[in-house]
Length: 519
Image 1 (cartoon, one colour):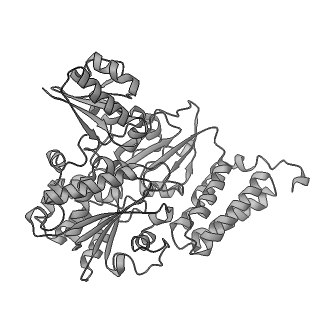
Image 2: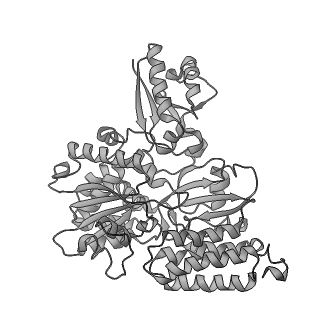
Image 3: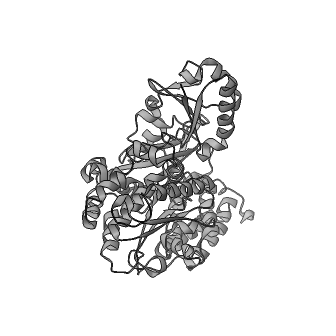
């Protein structure tokens, strides 16, 4: 009787030796005369336990991890293929506390299925959302998305239903669906995990969007730093066409939706939707002025629906289970679930999917287990490099668009980066300016010049040169960048800078006692 072993092909697991482990497991089983089939899955998102190997038993899956190359022989000798006891045995992966406490609607297949198998995807509930959508007219699909209260998961939090409705109503001979998979924020990896572990969920969501809006062609704009995701998506799309879930006559419905993956060139600014569209058209990635909005004049001047990976991947569940079932999760105007990515100085980093409303402290302490260094948490940055730094007294803020905004922060893409008490917040503020200066498309003066002047001025503050006057100049620069920048690149850079100055003023005054000659 053949035994199935599941070994992740996720980028994090590969970086930690998953390929070597998979080869050693196969060779070791062959030497022992064991009949073993190895399925390469995505990751369940428990980064500190990767590579996490699972074995299928009559009682269900049993997990072991983290498995290193040198552990393989001992595991096989101990009875890995039977789920036997071993120091690395974790038991039922679904009962590991980090996973058991989650509310996985979007990520429930990640780490479970063969990511490029249409059959495995359908066996685990895939394409039920598209089947439900095909029984509705376009307006019915859009109403379901609207009534679910799904908001764009890319960071802006704009109601998805409004954007879908705008594209649906637009008149044109050609429309497009574009997925923003240019996941460039520090501490974020949910998009990558999804594309590497459950790509058909994204493909299905985009196909539903195409049916709803009348778009017959879609593009996934993928960051160049994700080669594994690129290969997985291309294979999944080819398999989808062969299985009749992509291309002409989808599932025998007479509907058409063609999909391609396009690689970006490593520009952070192309995470902004209009800059992305410029790049997709083969031009330099520069922000467009709005109006017109992409929903009316987007890719090649045609109506274009642009959403993030996590927005599209929420849609199949909504169509299958109903708008109300999705809206029953969350709080206030932030409904549904949020894929939270926990990184930085943290003991248990990884992917956490929970309903909106969980607090930062719960994420860091209950899921993350505190800092990896064992030192106190001093600052937490939420929402990528343009997100605010929160001190300890704000860690009870719920992850909710409005609650975070009330504290001058943002949810962003759900990335959380933890710093212990050794962090220098003046250096972090300087980095925000430096990041903006490096990544700016250069189109607008507040962003292009303001960020460069910000670095220069922060250098003076750190050196103790007229700190009070130069901090006032930093505040003035931030006001100009916030009010005058063309897009969020320059408009949000002041958020990490001013939060650092506001909550950690002592780090900006350390050099203030230097002798006057230093000025």
